[in-house]
Image 1 (cartoon, rainbow, N blue to C red):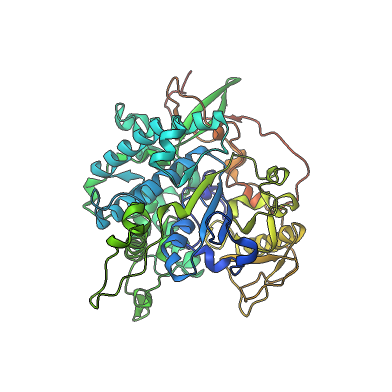
Image 2: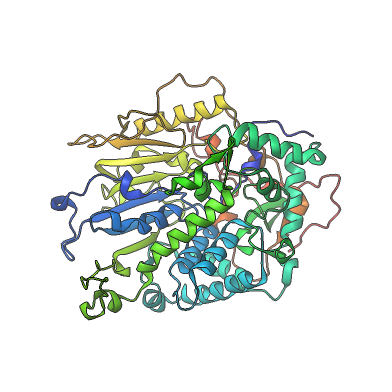
Length: 546
């Protein structure tokens, strides 16, 4: 079997990293209006942002890191994902970003983030950090008082009790190192995904990798991704090799997720790797940089690789984030404010309580407008490409008049052809218009994001790239094969006994497959059926039983 281009199967059904560069959400939001947005309690304007499918927190981290460049604001981030594993990764990433610098240095934090976020295999010290943090978070989730005391930036109040139980179960799986690699054999799962995706082209996988890189990703603006690092990630799942290759051998459990399968008429819960195997984590931090010297070329070739640019950007981001992790007393006490060489005091850094991350209940996108606290609340709405199908008039009602909408496009999805990318962009424009938004006028087009504003009393005050109008493509994209075909048996692992099933197991087809489904107008609610589990010829491993 040869997987045809355009099938979308390489995208997977769960997203672990973004398919667009990190953006500063303040730069995308409307200008500060102190009269209408000022917080009466603190006297500081608020920025309320709703993010659907932001996945890895990159936009939040960049917004906080660049906060000093803007007028002072209090941030309220409302994050909605489609699986609890993504929520858990958000919490783990922010716990690392706000780690006390005296306990973990800047370089160690940056390297730990890169491996934990984008590598299928970890070094033992990084795996030990994940286990320790996961165990700590597992103990905090069921205790709201301790959670509010130790993580004041986090709010889980909008989650249902069963979702909190599922979140605790995810952390306990990450923390449970007693079973060793057998609990989540990442190398075998990764190779099985490749075999299932490439089919008869598996033996020529290096040629396929080079074609996808040079003829697709490079042509679409990711020229800094080097052939060697892309090949390594395609073969092993290790994107950032910061040490000797032999040091990476511990499976990264944070990339595990569950699905409900059907075997012999019974519903079986299985755990495996269902994420991206074609694009990689290089796009989020590795193809753009504030320091233009990193993007220079010599003889037509970039002088820095995407991995090197990613490491530099993440290090600088964590350096700026250190101000948010300082104790409030050390920032607010004038006696502790240090001065420069002339004796003049430095500007006070923002206090850590001036941002909060609220995690919303899974599947609540279509019901938020029923609550008065959300209706017309948000100045900015961000929608990832895998969540475009949730863009609706009901969701648009949660955005204030004059608010902004930014939609991630499918520019770096290598499985999609150019006509499919254009069809997706056109469909995004239709959904945004139906939700009450209009394209922002601008001088240039953006292939990565589509930007809109909500028509109200005021027009947009600055120009942004707009989605170009065009004739909708006559080709209707079908859902990816992984959304309809059952996964091979060796892609799954049985869930641990006694672990409460998480929300993603209830709806296995609500995933990144929705990116392609967004091109087809909804025809009514359909309940996904359990998938039938079949075994490919090369597989002889037993079916997981419960």
